[in-house]
Length: 428
Image 1 (tube, rainbow, N blue to C red):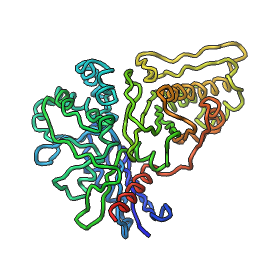
Image 2 (cartoon, one colour):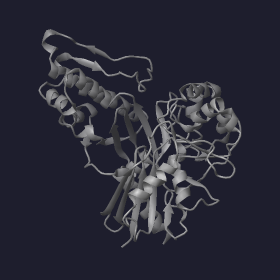
Image 3 (cartoon, rainbow, N blue to C red):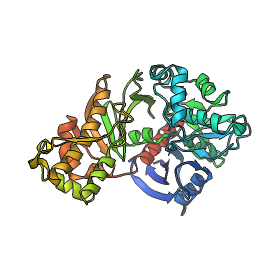
Image 4 (spheres, rainbow, N blue to C red):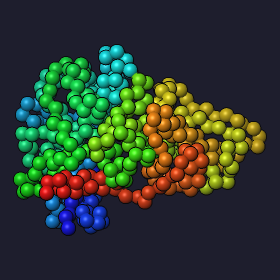
């Protein structure tokens, strides 16, 4: 029997699962919040403090290998000595919005970026943060000699800060300067964004080890949270995952990288050697919360109201573009409510229209993947809202496939543990 651990450092907390490699059973678990907020400028030492707290009480005793999953799109800029030039920039930092637009035009538009790295720059991506740094903090930018993302930095710290720096395909593909199609860095895009070349981590394979700690503990390649969650769920070809947060995301495992000239599909790599095309929507559970507030209830109450209505919401249609929309690309639009008749102006019909509108928006995102040849035979719904009765009842008809709502679990941490077991087996 082997014992491995999966560590997930999200924007808010660290979760650790310790698993038996023979059965996959979770033996022990640990949790600790991050001592500082997860947006804006963050001292990454807070992640290590949280990790230490989550591992208290001998949680990692007997563990032979650790896998690391971490929040995506964070940027850590280091000098030639491996010291942070400034605090880490997080994925939900919106200061780089204009920098992303500038970069898009600088390379020749959305199609040029989609062909180069499979994704058009957004404020969340490290490549846009580099352009923002170059413009906003010129006095410190010349000191930047090396770039990492949160998962890379955590692995490096666990290994005792060795000379070798590593990452994996999944994390690299969310940087904006690594191509999932070619499997290579694009240093020219770093130059375009930052103004000079820097050191980038070595991209290692899914079953490779990043190294061993000074105590001899094997550390696997690690990956980003989305990739780890897909691995933890056991998502394969023919499966899609819809994540219901305030905004929504739809992703699926595919055998090849997808270059989408519109930039709607983000062509990421997964944690197994396959590809992970992702489509985002801006309006998911925020649509439900806004409608619930309007009706003076909560999400459970909104679901109960919706179940009193019928399919089609008595003709009421809510187009839920409350924050503009990313799929389709309509950043400045607004939502609309149509089909108002005397008989449709009831709380239950508006409640159901909110669920139908949200799910239709996600079905549109799913159709974007289908339109590029991605097979979808089954959909996993993730997030607390996935368990609402109205979501479970309405989703199968609107999505047109079997819908599975998995039991709540730390799937990113489980995926990291699964990767650790893979690397441990390969090392033997």
